[in-house]
Image 1 (tube, helix red, strand yellow):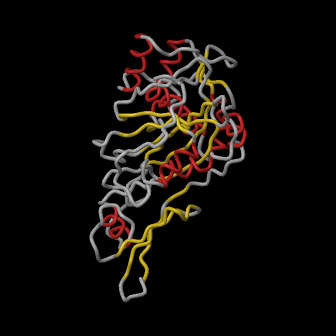
Image 2: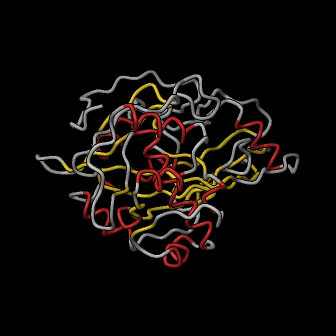
Image 3: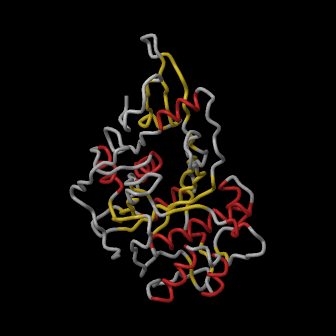
Length: 321
């Protein structure tokens, strides 16, 4: 896919059944699961570590655009919602048996920044770089610590990408085969969100920001997406507010946070001061003032996502109560 910004003037997309009055993704099974959690009938599953990347590209007429992909409606989780390239950690990236060629801040520094052990920090950073390559065809790696590959198209690159997706090839072996080093300095840690405890599929996800390397192009390389686009964060947020683009809370929250920055370099510089305290939704039961009870679902620090669900009624197909 061309890296030319593609900013839809009016992205008229039908909202999935699990969206609310705006574009907030809200699956119909959530109310029942929220009530079960609040009443102690649901045991949370442990979250899986993951990483996602807000890929930015500067434009001649001012302001960066961000790369989004739309998850296929058939996907079990967040079908029809827009998101960034990303995915789960590969356990092999934590193993000493697979040495990852590394450039940029040391693993120890990344561990302090992410709040985890060094092996976990390596795996999370690897996931960010690998998943961006797997889903967008963009690779944050180069022959040495000062360069980045300029072109990742062609049959040989596609064969390696497919092998990574199938987990037939470890990321360390991929870098070794290509004689590349991972450019961790091209990433900026931005936020950390943990999937709510009532969800069946849970992720502990670190959000990173990165600039599209010169010479590389994005493309829809993911089998999980049916559309990709480049769009200004403010325009994406406005489309969400109109209910035209569906997103999960972490996506729209981080898009709003990107709006003040004039270019990708400014966003990357700002990432060094970002608070990485995990954001985790909370569900509680409270009196509704009419003799009944309701479930209140909230994301600390993000009041716009608060939902009120009557405790004695079935799910309302994703609409806010």
